[in-house]
Image 1 (cartoon, helix red, strand yellow):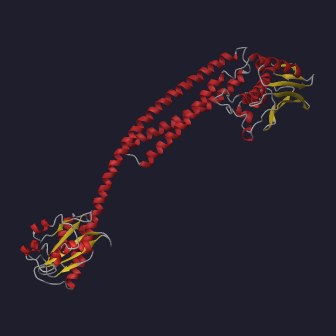
Image 2 (cartoon, one colour):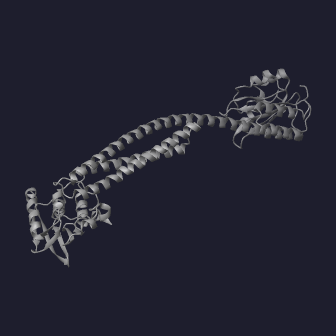
Length: 493
């Protein structure tokens, strides 16, 4: 071996650490390390073997002064308890000092490998990542029988320390590259999924546009129908009712337009970001999917609500002529109303009784009053006597205070559950959904009483004892100018 120029050990350490910091290739760094170490001792040959991640097999890491054929023969060896100096040191995780290769049992199966090169002593020390993880081994060879002294022990410590730093850095780089490649694959996968989701979102947006267009057309049709029906003498309180329906329709349609606009803006922004950056963060994509799913649920609810309103429109149209204001006697008018209901109630399970004093003069709207009683009696027919063979509905009236009459409709049916009592006047609230109940009857009744008739509605119910609707009515109804358009929001304030 031609002895290299001796570099002071501290200077060599600084040089090697700088190479590691700058990212020099591992073999170049390890070769330089061994050259510096070899220069510190006459007749010294050094090698570094690397242990594969499987923890069993080795391959040459560096040995610039070692015979090339000898280093090549070590490639693929498995470590073990009797595998020379290096294989045994890595297996035992401790230094192995062999002072004479030719007589040491650790080298018995392998001394023929080194004999042609004249090596007699070999001291090997494991290179550790941590206490339990071996990265490889550093070995010193001499052509004479000898043991390590203080100088050699210091060189071993420096060499294993520097080599451990360099090897660990290379492993970290390899692991980082692996993660980088996996991340690239994941980004490609998520990008493909995002593109598919984007296409689905665009299709959903187009479908929403069509749905909103159909709803807008339906609203236009309803407005045209309103104009026509207002002039028909066969509809009851059409102006107020259509205004209420239009008010209710505007809410779900407005919600749909708002949600669609928001979803379209998000899709556009996401698309622009993807086109600009070429990728999206997982959190951004997840947030977009969550927003799309939530928007879809809101749209479905509002579209169903609008469809139900449109379907129910024809159910709540009434005869316009019956909204004419006139003077009438309350008892006679209620008798006439009940008389008109008898054909429909001939198969009902209950009877209607009246207890109304004569001579009570009203200046009001008999048509809307008729609809109020119709709604209450129909509500009793559908709900009050379910599971009962018979029952009674009593209509009574008495003076509550000067200028006001208390009209009561009382049944002895099953009653209303406490959890429902606060909701019975809400639009579309019904316990008979899907079996004929629309949830509009009591809501319309409430609006007529509080709107056209200028009164109030109270309800009291006990389970198993029946329900009483108490309607407080002025004998002189408000003037139309002060009545205004009645709707759920105004009535419930």
